[in-house]
Length: 137
Image 1 (cartoon, one colour):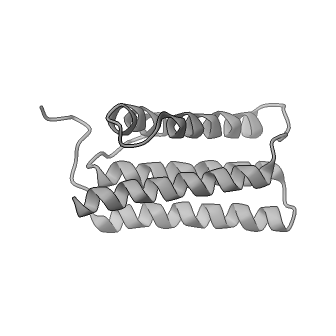
Image 2 (cartoon, helix red, strand yellow):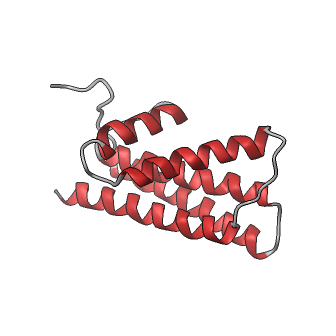
């Protein structure tokens, strides 16, 4: 059954998304190392995850059109089909919620930033594996 979200995405587009994800992770890591605002770090980490998830979806032929669409497709196409564990969907959702709180809320950044960087690194590695596996199939 054809899926309305399904499209043909070039490898160049997939690579570009991963490049953006890696750049955002590097920016967050540098910001952490020089003790820049934790809010900046949280923002960069969310966008690193977003771009990596989008790349993984691209590799499976999906072209999400919004942040919410990335989360929906990740759940529907990659988690429900057993491609990635559910914890990664929760992680992306948590990053987005945390980013919104930091960007628009009145709360501070109280999580261990070093731990968030390590978790984000793991997320990116998993999304890269998902994309690599699908391309070689």
